[in-house]
Image (cartoon, rainbow, N blue to C red; front, side, top):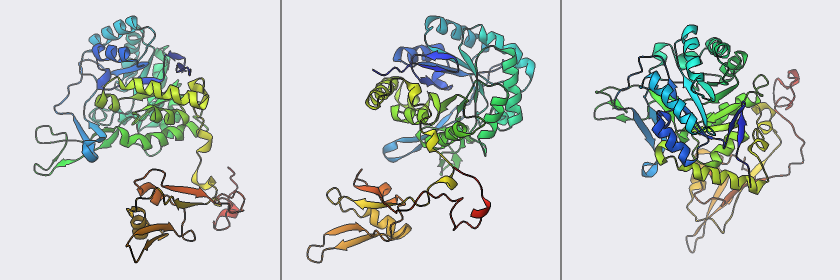
Length: 429
């Protein structure tokens, strides 16, 4: 049976599933319930200086799909609103009671070295396994010069990281903001400052929807609102890309990554790990479905690993990174063509409408004059293999993209004679 235990930047964990720093990890009661449910670790909700932050009411909103499925979750809650002393006391006791579970303490303070130097020994005394520097919170705290206000400036990231490495012996994980043009810059800065790992992504600036009667966005606080942090399944594609960018960057490729962003099941977790995450952090899915979702995550990942022959998580961490490249290195001579399985086709015509109206007019609608029966066939000469028909088809597996033998060798854009600068480019894959 697959071994789900991991070691992440020197920290041993019974499994790779951790709860992210957020409301689910705000107090001992929640954390103990999480450990009882089977989570391998938690990142305790962000601690700061006293007096504690003060939150508003209300705090959450959502972006819904059909049947009120929550696609994205928005929050304007700040860091812990409980005193530093109470948090430290609870962390100490929980770690004592659960020595085999990981407790990482998230921290956020102004950019003053002495403040960090003062709090770090207090955190170490709790027995915590590491610290996570919250450089990603996009609301409230940046207005005070913290959170994303630090994470968006690589020089600040490097500076504060170095302070923490100077004043603490604990592993330092730097949590990165996605509200930035190129996530590699702060990741490189974190590494330069001595970070043991990075975690990403934090939440994305967002407004989910409005009350058009009151003309105010949600969540509503006394007739007004503000942008908040967006998370949940909708941010997963963004998170995967940013994780991959750091994992394949020559300057940060060896930096351990804790993946965060829209992870709701074992497959999501496996995808993050395949792109370089040594462990994953979950928040929104737990808030929507409760802590016991970790049972399915552990069971599903274990079964998949057994099926694939992986005995440990480390065997597939980063395995998809070599297959992730820049667009210019993709094979220009590779070709696929759509194929419709007529036995599975329900004749809805969605593929035809999508292709005819918005794509390459490569699907023919054939109507039997006698019966009026419709049939849809791919016009191979016109198909560019864009995948739109496969995506719009409501029957999984009915439309497949079939590779074609072009008889042409690999050729990327830097080599393509159609590239006006091809002769000047000397890069190779």
